[in-house]
Image 1: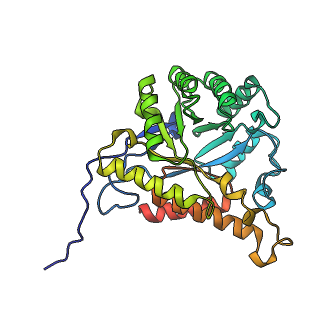
Image 2: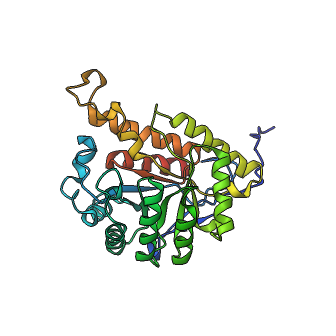
Image 3: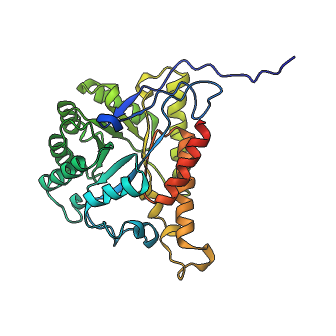
Length: 315
């Protein structure tokens, strides 16, 4: 008698969300089982990776190993985005408007919107535009970006409970998708999705951003929250959590001491570039197993490793 592996029956499914426009638009979600459980359900749209690009030179903040691949284009976000696509095969670009930080350069919303428009018009892959989590400033900046990038179906984030009305309304008006960010809590994520629905934003225009921790720095808690999010969506019929997940993770990995300490400062930790790349790749792999549909990453080598893993798990 042949042995049959017991299979879990899922009553829910992750709703598909399409970002970008044209031939290289990406559809996320659609899963009918837990991540990579292809023996129990379908995963019609494999997870994707966006490469992070800043609107200002990050030389003062990025460790040398992750800055090195982009040092020739770091002062020009358009050139940087195009290099990510042409040299590293980026499937999407995540433009971080770091210059708008009120505690930094505090660039205007108009300037940020102009930069976002230039990048959007220069690339043919989906664009994600993130602010700096300064709620009031992000609302102003992302509202302007939404208007300047009309018709591009970009992702605007992080949208939070204190600024969702302004950003959500602009996204709705100009046909964009939002990354709904909550502080690592399933109920708060669900509540924000409900608020967006009440505002009129359809589920097909919402990604869940659960707030992401780096390996050894909160990623374990993030993993468990994402896991419970997926359980509620797939086995408990919670339709407000049946949405794809986006993880803004590159920044969390490359700011920790294990990635920042140089070979001279911490020879006992091994080569700085290798440890940073591996920390980013392992963080990404963990998030994929928790249910991530879209990762925002930095180092090309780490991205190559993770893409290989995705192909292997979805073959």
